[in-house]
Length: 501
Image 1 (cartoon, rainbow, N blue to C red):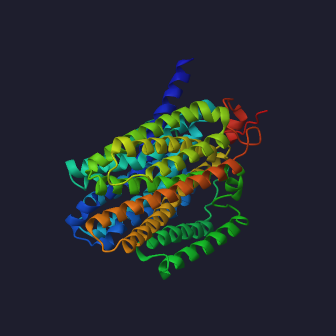
Image 2: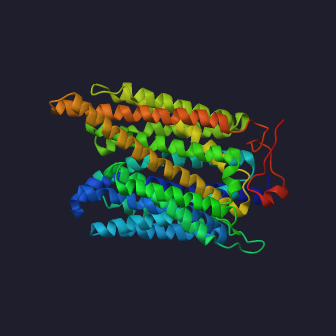
Image 3: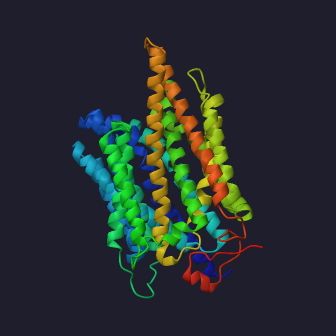
């Protein structure tokens, strides 16, 4: 191998480190602030009712602007978009860390979400266009998928350490340091690709329609957690979201420069991949939320202990991601691997339903977490790799944004549904076991967690069936193989479809 080839290979893998840092920063920020909320509330003096906005402000702007962020990376260049996203995210994080009022903290979190929507799809698009040889692509997506799946758990651990050791504000300040390292790497190692042909235009009507639809969807589900499903604001927002989404799809069929060409999502393999990411996102957020409640409120764990409790799950996730993308997916394809991952997810969730007040971490909690970690590591990298396979380079950003959108929307839907179902189960338990004592209240909480786990198992079970039905068999379209792309295909596509058999 020549020195030039070796240097190019090194630059590619350092690029993976850079975009991995950016992805980690965006994903962990969805959970790292959760553990800091009680301290922030005591410091800034906001109410319990206001507290949810510190989380919701981030998820609203992030989810609603993801497709715009992905398309902008296609239009103005990925390196430029990546750098702007990093700088903006760092500034927003610094503002949030220095916030002296609740209003400024919420505004900073919303700004974080906006720049995160620019950064996350661009990071995946950079990865997609950097690694075109299938064997290297599999390894790179194994790492990236592991980060996407484990970021929430890493956020819980980091949040606990920073809150207990330093101050809640460092849960935001830490992003400045991560962004600084990634920024240096971006300037040095991410190449600036010259555009060939005319610059496409931004689909402004499509952007407004889909951003409004995603905003209404996430806001509606978030409001359902606090206001209930029968609240006018809940069903009003969800109805408006549905109307705007239908209008967006209709517009994309006739737009001269569509924001999201429908051929991207209507491809059977990519559609199955996006759906799998959405279902896995719903289950994943449920795992973090209710296992955290159980460990802290039932077993009495501290924030740091809770974060450490998730480490074996992360280890299994990373192991499965590397094993799957390097060995199993190229050999068997997502049609086999993703349903297996979904089935394991259901098994892990069912295992958690047996937890009670006398359960121990090592005997009762750890096995379920490890199975769930292996499940997520099997689902996420394979789905993410398939979701961006064979997409024209000019649409790599928006195709990547659909991955992030699916995960974020899945998390919002899963969190809202599981929270509501858990709350109903707890209320029913209290009514059936009156008079209410402290012991009855503790049992009601455990019953609510069990209900959430059963429904989470149902999510994964449905995902197993759908992914088994929707993904194509090998040799019937896009597939992941070890064949290298031709020079012509590499110029036009992220990775050309390879037909096997």
